[in-house]
Length: 414
Ligand SMILES: *[C@@H]1O[C@H](CO)[C@@H](O)[C@H](O)[C@H]1NC(C)=O
Ligand SMILES: *[C@@H]1O[C@H](CO)[C@@H](O)[C@H](O)[C@H]1NC(C)=O
Ligand SMILES: *[C@@H]1O[C@H](CO)[C@@H](O)[C@H](O)[C@H]1NC(C)=O
Image (tube, rainbow, N blue to C red; front, side, top):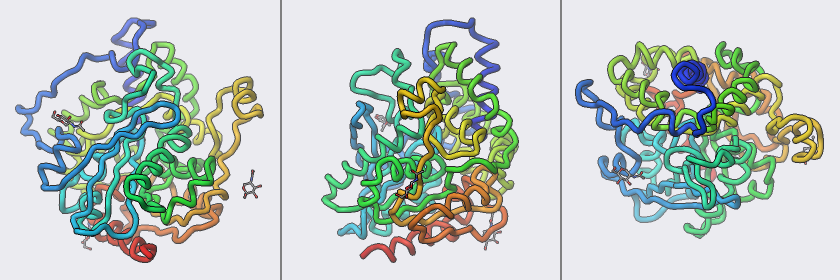
């Protein structure tokens, strides 16, 4: 995630140096649509394939579903049905992290992609795309290109609207009573927001697995987000005054440049960026996977999401978006934003954390775990170099994380 912060900074530099201020456009128009120059770089094909193309390539069925939220956002959810006659346990909803997409669960390929492994083990897999990313950039009334109102959301809305809508949809299609949820990074934040703002949804969750959980961010160790968080209000104001509400979209330079650079030098460039951001140790994600990852990351979200995380770091609290005193009063009935009350998240939860995760530090995870009323386990991956993204793309993730997830599911499959 911090790469994203670093890139925000670069992005601002880029924007302020290349574009006359006050041009009336939204983020998507910053750069013209570009076809990546793939061939000369000896590219890896999977970098450029979308969810459907990837699943097809590796011999898996996938379905594309559309879910509309109460507030009109149109989301794409991908389903990978179980590779078995009969589905096991409960349908599994997968929730990606910030500026990421459903691709994250399959991009390391059929041997080590969690989406495939779950399907092989007879689970019915549903991978969400939260509002604003490349697959879910739609609304019944608002146009993401023209209406800045479209981008006025953060993980608060992802948790309040998107996830409940997806859960209800999946339960309706599968005729099940409950789902499993697996979230990574912001995917865990969204889940905790849902459980505390809409506690009735806890009934619909059999078990959730929160990988690299993000709620309290008091103790993050990554220096750059720490620094930038102090400026997050100014950064947001600056970006939005330039008409920029969408950040790190697929067609923007923040995606295109790393996508190309990481084809040439995945470890040197992308590995170093990850290291600065999340505490990544060289070699713990293969450079092959690193190169693919970058073709699928930075696929869009709102400036407001980043600003909300900045507020969490700066305030040291896990609370709703601070809109400023006057607006807070109108929206929340108090001058300060209310805290998310995670003691209302009564569904069973397993936390997965790691010692070298500079973003979800052990201290912050422990604050969260001490407040959760139905904690099944606070599992620390027994590998000292394990970090934020290793839970999903890491060498040995199958051994150290995915097998464990399957074991927890077995326990709750009743
Ligand atoms: C994936 O790419 C193919 C080919 O460009 C396109 O037809 C398809 O609609 C895309 N699928 C999704 C889910 O975006
Ligand atoms: C993966 O596991 C093997 C066997 O336990 C170990 O030798 C290796 O160092 C691990 N690699 C990483 C990157 O964690
Ligand atoms: C949080 O929820 C718990 C459980 O319902 C309740 O006892 C407590 O008063 C709530 N805390 C706040 C600050 O609202």
